[in-house]
Image (cartoon, rainbow, N blue to C red):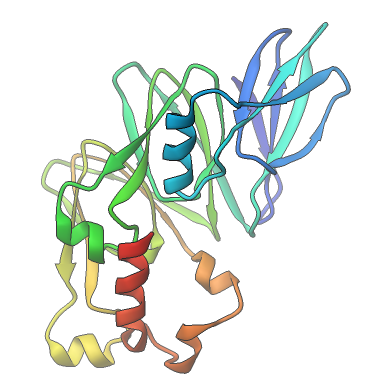
Length: 239
């Protein structure tokens, strides 16, 4: 899949399609297309549609195909942020937060990932079910703000604010870690748990969160993460 990414914090991915090449994209992600690119909605496979729905994506993919020559499709996210591409080899797996998927080539496989540790599922901020992408293929993800990428060595640990986790390789161990004592938890403004990421593997974080970019609701009454701990726990369990 040939692509370029343009823009700063409102980025657009420009996908160049060869004649007959197929692009899968999240519904509503298209910004523009050339006239020779056709659009269809995937309506087969209710099992796959259900899996997409419970990971925060639309039930059915939008499929773009170029006819009679090369074509062009532009796709973008729904909030200010960055787009990052991941090219996966056969056997590679990438785990991503709900709602991060933007588009991919037709070879890439999508599935759900059940969080192995119950604690991480309920208190890790992302819920029990995440998205899993398997190679070979290329997937483009969209997240809020700027993206920060770390390559963790074996047994190297990174503690992450749970809402800032975007994606990680399946080789990374995902768990939760208590922030600290009661005083730190209540007054430190960092909530109860960190997402504990242990290498080896790649971890991608976002500098902002969707909640930061949306009008404040329940969190506005506290002005800190400490005051929203219960709400965050409930949202994480229900997502």
